[in-house]
Amino acid sequence: MSPALRCHRCGERYEDATRVRCGCGEPLWFETDAAAFTWADRRSHEGMWRYEPLLPIDGPDGLAWAAGGTPLVRSEGLDDAAGCRVCVKDEGEHPTGAYKDRGSAAAVPHATAAGDGAVGTVSYGNMAMSTAAHAASLGRECVVLVPDDISPVRLELIDQYGPTIVRVDGDYGALYGDALELSAALPVRFLVSDDPARISGYKTALFEICEAFAPDAPDALALPTSSGGFASGLWRGIRDLEAAGLLDDPPRLYLVQTAASDPITRAFDAGAVDPTPLSPEETGETIAHSIGNPDPPSGGRALAAVRDTGGAVVSVTDDEIRAAQRRFAVDGGFCVEPASAASLAGVARLSERGEVDDDDAVVLLPTGTGFKELGAGDASVATERTSRAALPERLASLLGVS
Ligand SMILES: *Cc1c(COP(=O)(O)O)cnc(C)c1O
Ligand SMILES: [Zn+2]
Image: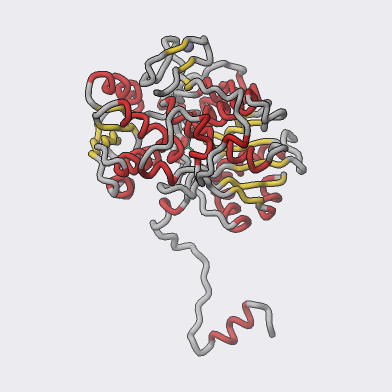
């Protein structure tokens, strides 16, 4: 039996574990009894299920076992670009290439255990791939609602897992609310960005980082933020470890948005409790399409997380993101998608502002792999050319051997 749900904002408690939002409008969290947890209670599993005692379901079947356990690497090559001591938690190393698998690994089995119907999601990016993959592994039908003008590349990425893909003409942003109503009316559970089981899966990234640093903790974590779901999960993880007495000095949460659509940054700067949704005129195009949400469902939770941990929210431009993506690869060897590169660009800004120190240990969370984005062909790639016969001499000259 799964635990009850609790509203962080008003304290209301719900026994119905399929509920998503509180009557007050806030997304809900699963209650966990973390007070008695010690590191010795973790299971011997490899991935995120080693924290099973702090999750709302027991280790399920299927692809869920491939979630979590991503590498955490000290990456000295990125120190210069970031202006601090960098560790990289490479969340792109998941079955579908994004941290979303931690959430799907908990939410899809949670939904399938609760009923016979299909699962679904509203996404044309990483959330769609992840939900479809985890549903496929459980033999469960999956419905993915995508915008009518979705690109063929994205369709192909999502379609490989065999979901029912429905192109929807109309206000795509409004589908988030529709999906919750459709879940109540039809035999399909839409698992959107703030689904409580999904959020509980995300907190395992925080557990993995803190376990690696224990008994110390990193000074800060930096992540790209859109709906605020990942931030909510990481903060929930911090609170669990604090309740368990395992984290005295929690890391500051630094959230990075794209300047093209940054309602959470605006609310942070204005001292607001909740973000104000941006109008279409206030939203621009960005290469960081995984973080372009003008109306973030977990925005209030993300802001609370930042303020509670003494962090900040910053926005970065596409030019800064492009440069950071290049530094991730050239200075660190990481292939990250543009949204993920925003983590580095944001920390560089905070270092310039003096909010991050050069001896701070900062964990960057590149949330998704860059491999899905490549393939359009870049004619500007600089190469050397030679004949096979002239190769030894050419190579010698390139290597500076005369
Ligand atoms: C979903 C996603 C994000 C944004 O995460 P939220 O939980 O919506 O804030 C960031 N980066 C990547 C790669 C994503 O797929
Ligand atoms: Zn509430």
